Structure formats: structure tokens, C-alpha cells
Amino acid sequence: MYKVRTYNKIAVKGLNCFDRQHYEVGSDIGHPEAFLIRSQKLHDVAMPETLLAIARAGAGVNNVPVNDCSTRGIVVFNTPGANANAVKELVIAGMLMSTRGILPGIAYVNSLTAITDSGEMSTLLEKEKARFAGIEVKGKTLGIVGLGAIGSMVADMALALDMKVVGFDPALSVDAAWRLSNAVTRMENLQSLLARSDFISLHVPAIDATHHLINDEALRLVKPTTVILNFARESIVDPAAIKRSLDADKLGHYVCDFPEPMLLNHSKVIAMPHIGASTEESEENCAVMAANQLVNYLEDGNVTNSVNFPSVSLNRTPGATRITVLNDNVSGVLGHVLSVLAENQVNVIDMVNKSRGDLGINIIDAETAVGDAVIAAIRAVPHVIRVRVLPAAMV
Image 1 (cartoon, helix red, strand yellow):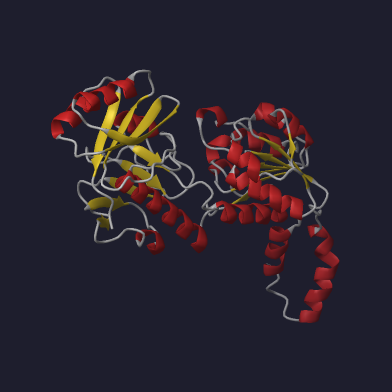
Image 2 (spheres, helix red, strand yellow):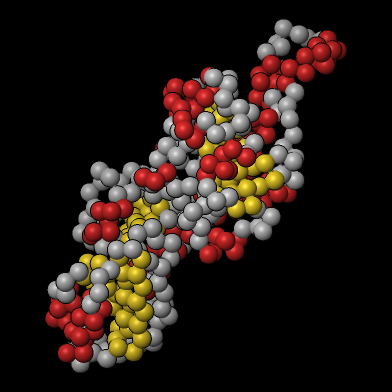
């Protein structure tokens, strides 16, 4: 029986992915093998020795102490792409609200409570509507910073609106490149994108390299009419720099999903209450993906969409004993592990080894059962972080 502790409200559709014959799931579970979270900040949460994995039902994992988890052999999962459509739709909403006078127009209409005659109201609105005139996005250039799951969908949306699209992503993966339309012009650097774009949509993770990516220096390159849309993370943008540019008429609008006190009620700021992924469909998609990733790892040792360990998968060999080894990515570890098995007459019938950065994973299927002494010897191999012996495949 595996135990999964949940934090926040997890969509029922995701919780139903756990077979209750094999899983105990709840918010007050003791000694869990897994955490399933949304926005819960775990930096100050005690992590039990039993914890094997954390799945975040969402893309960002800045609420998880990933480095500490890596050291302890805790695999951290996220759900890239599960909320992409929801964010994409909000990006287009933000883009249109920034260009068409929609919000001030609605506010003006709702202020006309003293008028009781519909004819009088119609005449007044016909006279005043020019105050809320805007521009069309057709033919304008959208610059997308970060061309992953969400960025590529935003690109497709913009192309469907007859916009020109340029993109910049120095870490573009092969999978993301396949998803990206060939109508998107790849820019060699961020500076070129900033200078060329009428709209700039940010879709990069919150890491050290992207902290205040949009700052005073970057904003000096944009057109004074440019609209910046931030539906990624608040730390990517320096709010003080944004305010200085808006106040000096060096930036057209700032649209974001992360309100900042200094930007509240600014006439050129549209701030939303972090609702990018707040749709019924998105929450269900994220929960289902996160739950399935936990099940696949807990039961079979397979890893998909981990932010700290490499992706790895091995089909189960009928009747085999499965051993998983998490280790530092240094030479000789796998050789030492295999030597331990050979010295104890344990025959390996299938295996896979993957590494990424400083970490590696080995999945080994042994022909026979493996005793505690053998597992203890593997744990004693230098640079081995965690060893598991998985029970036979669940049915």
C-alpha cells in the first residue's frame, strides 16, 4: 500500500487515478511515499524519510526545494503543457484588453447610472466611444520569450490572428522545436526580439538566469507602444523598472497574472489574480498528469517530466525483481552496482541507465529475488543516493 499526502485542492479526476486497493490518499496521511501538490510551499515543510517523490500539478516548481530533494533522492515532477491551453487563452484576452479600450469602456458604461433613458444613453455613447478606440493585432509582431509548451501554443494562436511571430529560446528542446510552426522567426538574441516586437509574451521558468530578465536595460530597447505580457512568473520582471518605463511613456502597457503593490491602479497596467491555469479543464489535466507520473514512478520506477532527475522508462520483465538506483552522475557507479550483483550471483536480464546534469538513474531487472544484504551493499557504493526494490507489477 502506497501513501500519498495531498496539499491544496486536487481535482477529483486526478485523485481517481490512484487505485484505492493499492493507495491511501489524503491530506493527513502519515509517513507518505509521495506528495501531490499545487501551490503549497514546501521549503519549510518537514519531509519524512519515507518520501520518494513530489508531483506538482502545474509547471512551476519554485515552491519546492528541488536541490534538497535531489540530495535526498526525492524525484520532483511537474506537468508541463497540462495548463498550456488555459494560459494561452488568457494571453490573448490580455492582449486584446490592452489594445481595445475594453476595460475603461466597460467602467465608463457602468458609471452612467444617472441616465434612465436608453435613447439618451445611446446618443452619449456614440459621442464618447472615440475615447476608447484601439488598434487591431492583425499584422503586428508578437515576440515570444520561451518556446516551450505554452509559448508554441501562443505562437499558433498569434499566427491564426494574422500576426507576425518572432521567438527566442536559447534552451529550446528537440520536442519543442518539432511543435513550433516554421512560420515563427527564430531570433538569435533577446535584444533583437525586444526591439522588433509590438507585443512581448514571456514564457520562461523562474530560475536564476531569468530573474528580472525584463529590467531597465531590457526596457530601453522596446518601442514606447509595446505591450509586455507576463503569464509566466513574477520574478521574471522587475516591477520597479516596469513602473519607471510606464511613467516615462517608454512602454505602452504591462499585462500580468502577478499583481504588485507598486503597480496597482496604474492606468497602463492590467493585473489579474494569478488565474492563468484556473480553469476546470486545466486543473483536471494537471492533476491527472501528476497522479499518473507518481503511479508510474512508485510502481515501476519510470520517470517522466522530472525537473531534477532524467527521464527513464523500462518495460517490466515478467517475474523479474526490479531495482532502481538513484546516484550522482560520476563515472564508475553503475559498474560498482553491477559488480555487487555479479558477486552475489544475481543475473541481470534487462536494464537502462540515464543521466542528466549531476544526477543519474538506473533501472535493473534481476532474474531472481535480491536479498537485503545485496541491497545494503548497493547502498554502500560511493555516490549512490537511493536504492529501491519494487514489488511485482500491480494488477
